[in-house]
Length: 227
Figure (cartoon, helix red, strand yellow):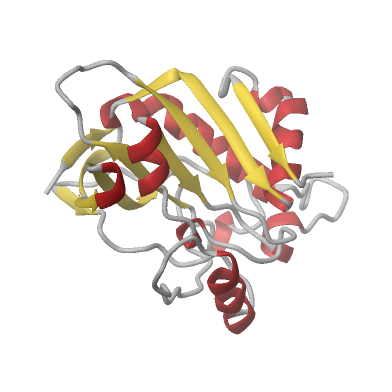
C-alpha cells in the first residue's frame, strides 16, 4: 500500500489499476486540510488541521458536507463518473480532499496538478462523486478533488463581524494552501496547479481567480458552465 508524508503526518492509501490506460494510480482518500468546522469553529474561517501520530488510513471516502442526504446521494449518483454507486454519509466534519497520483514510471519529474471543485449549486455535492484515477493515469497528472462547506454552513452571513460569510470559498482557499504545502510529497508540482470545476464549481473557479486571497495558490483556471 502506498504511503506519503504530509506536513501533518503520514498517510496510507491504496493502488488502483486503470486497465484501459495500463497504468496504476495511488489513491489517497479523506485527507484533512482543515480542522473540523464544528462547535466554536462553525461560521468561522477554516483552521489548519491538527497533526497526528503514526500512519493515518486514507482508504475511505470522507462524508459529504452538510446537505440533505437523500437528495445529495441522488445528485452524486446522477453525476458520478463511477460505474458503481458510492454510498456517502453527511457530516459537518467534512473538510477533506482526495488525491490520485499515477505510479512513477521511473522518471522522478514533478507532475502538473489538477484540482477539481465540484458543482451542486453551493448546496449539494461531494468530492468523492468524482474518481480522478482515469484522468491521472491517461494524462500523467496528479488529480485532487476537494470539498467545501455548503448551504447555510458555507455561506451564511449576518453582514457584520459576527458572521462574515463565504466560508465555503475560504475552505477552497485553505485546500489550495494545503496543496501548495503538501502536493510535492504525492509527486505533484506546486508551481503547476490548475483549478477547474463545473456549475457551482465553475463559479468557484471564477471567484478564486478574482480573489486576492488565492493569489499564488494556482496558475491556470478552467470554468465549466460557470456563468
